[in-house]
Image 1 (cartoon, rainbow, N blue to C red):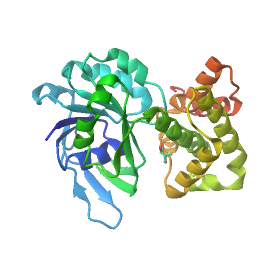
Image 2 (tube, helix red, strand yellow):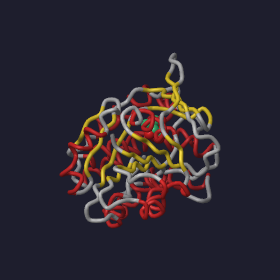
Image 3 (cartoon, protein in one colour):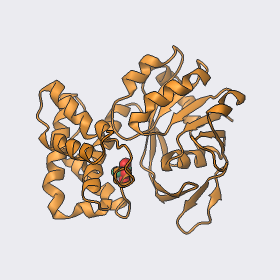
Image 4 (cartoon, helix red, strand yellow):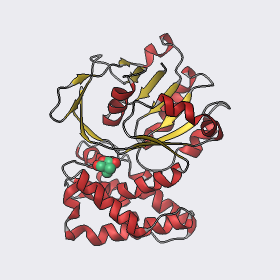
Length: 300
Ligand code: PAF
């Protein structure tokens, strides 16, 4: 039984906590613990209390050493959250990132102590918080993790065992490729759903097809320059499959814009724009959507 700290009580953080707490001691770090209970709910099934302890910064010192810390926060919150939590982590604690978009891995590797293993977990489980205390699990999905440094690579079998309560779990030797594939889905869905205030499924309408095609063409040009094995036809087919599977959901960026919160656009279209500048590849449609989403929210 491992001690696992989950940073972030958003939909993904709560779903991971629900499954992991079936076999481990799970602590969920929240900014405010107005109540120490959260619930997991799946369609047509009774809701279940999540068997985790919800804690704040003050309580971190009183807890046993963590074997693993999962950062289930937005891309732009990872480094700041890590710097706050770092003094409480042993040199052998596994670090796991799970967020939309790119960036962070190199910066975080530079912050880690020698023995700390860094992993990335991509999840396609769909869920949303119907209120502060309840996560609705709305779509089945895979949980795939991979190693982001040598220590992680050497210890991945132990991690596979530790993460075994997660649904459809597997280990990938090429997590960068998977992260890019997920990035392509987010590029196709997130900004347009937020700008047009629509559900994911509505993006299948013909009026969006040329923009989606252009967004993904630019991103695939970047992927090819980065020597990733990504094909435009697969990227398009994958994006439309996810739109269908999550047709009734609002994307995370849609929710962020509606609630006037900072979005992950810098780690999504912003990453493509940045790589385009670096590699001398034109990315006009990603630049345009980056600017339009930023204009919606002044802090991005
Ligand atoms: O960010 C999101 O909302 C999700 O990653 C996805 C896959 C686009 C589904 O809504």
